Length: 298
Image 1 (cartoon, rainbow, N blue to C red):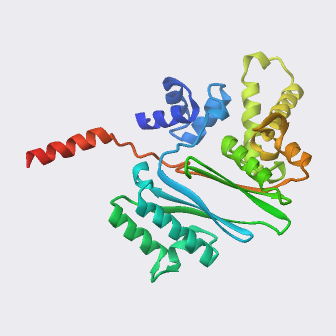
Image 2 (image 1 turned 90 degrees about the horizontal axis):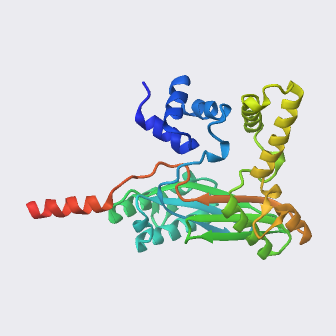
Image 3 (image 1 turned 90 degrees about the vertical axis):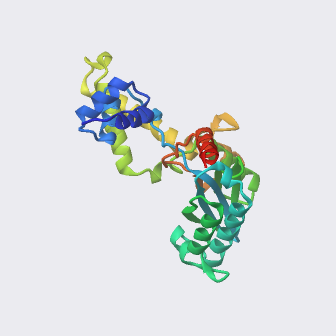
């Protein structure tokens, strides 16, 4: 049985119409992922319309220690709490722990000792005081070589944080790369690190889209294959940082911009608060009204 929640989720992922989404779910026995592919193959939904649902609140930040950077995301239930002094103090403590234990993941931070308590204890204590669930979602350790430089860009106070590594010592170039990553959110550094399974899946989707287009019905298989390879090449450029049109000068790619300045991209990490998480859907005004009425009834 296909329910309204499934149809809603598929519509948000694909931008397709309600009836098309329902039909796709029926055809795919309720499998959301398969239904997305089904819609794409029918030309009803495009890959670029599929986006992660961004919802959870909180902040991202980064701590530096020499040649190592530690990015982390601390979540709260509301944006209001993310601006709370106690929440910000906890952010600083998490940063200190990352550096002190050379944290490679969130578990390292949660189990580490800090001022007589573990990282997990600090978060539990903050939850009790603040009155909202606080959680450390993720930690990433990024290391550079001596002949490389970090770049940093924070958007909206830490809603998006990007750290890049480039060759050389020009921090301004590295920051430009970070700004580009913040804007365009590339999935990979370059073509060499694209997940083969992702690429094979995309090639299949593109080929099916082309083959199912009535305008291509009379085209031979060789032409379909050539069209597929052309679109796949474009897809690879769209998802790789070095091949994307540079945010400050779209006439050149990111790699060309860096090359003109005697540098090249080595690595990057991009965090955005709540990416891929389900949003808490509260009606704050209604909640306040309900609480007020409850108080009056006492």
